[in-house]
Amino acid sequence: MVKVRENYLRAFPKKEDFIAYMSTWVSDPKEETSIMLWAVKKYKLMPYLHYDLDSLKEIAAYVYETNFEKEHKGHTNISLQSK
Image (tube, rainbow, N blue to C red):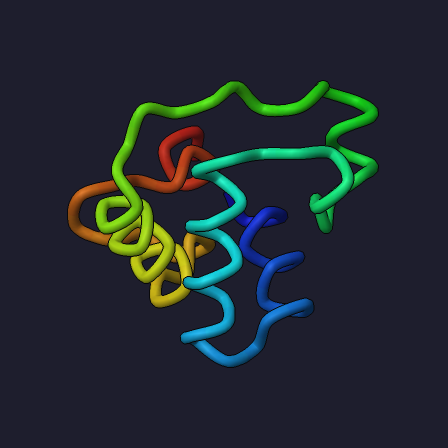
């Protein structure tokens, strides 16, 4: 998730742009609109997820606001667990 977030933040540093692009793309993923073509080539295009656009916007806002390199209540950093 860290690399995905970093790529989207570079492309869309403003929160509203980040949320709009990420939620729209995830609702209808296409190679030609991907900003992470290297990932599409390596892992293939992600499957369609059956979430409504409002839910995807909430998820995108969470991704924008959360630093996944730190441990937070609700999720743990795997590298911290292995120490």
